[in-house]
Image 1 (cartoon, rainbow, N blue to C red):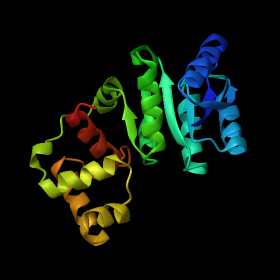
Image 2: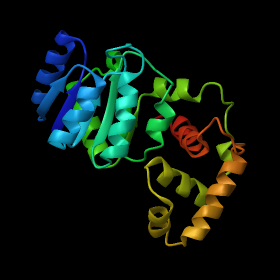
Image 3: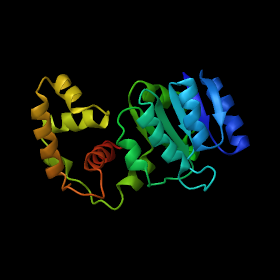
Image 4: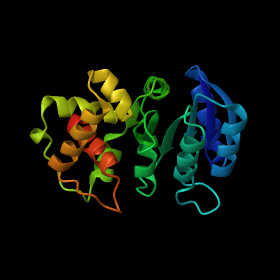
Length: 215
């Protein structure tokens, strides 16, 4: 696994380089800010980028904004946000980029094997979210009644959570894209997610599914 690492703390950055190397990764670049991370991904085309959230110059959400850019400009590169904080700004935008995205809290990664497994899952197109991240992203939105969904709708929602497109979901379930559109519309209605300029309805539906799964 080829990795670009972005972490502003020198000690943490060097420590993560050693840990990632022990986990079998090749750290092709280790930088200290979001812009450098985007440039390093362009240069090295890694399998995955691992980014902190709060980095120079403002120490707010630079890592998340860089992660969204990386996914937009280099969709083949998986992204793992590894931070001490749950920063809600841009987190939904990151999840909306599809498969191969993750958000873990540094203090809750207890084993090197867990980190290595998370990276492999992301590279394979999975989604890796700390339960605390899911809980905080889900806060402010009342519990969604997943019990209302049919078995087929739950299948569709599970594939949505894997970052699949409508066409890919249709192929997996052997139904037409038009049918998938109808299923997704029904899912959003049953989860009480009306059209909104402020929320990513598809992302909120996926978060509801992940929360229900205890991910």
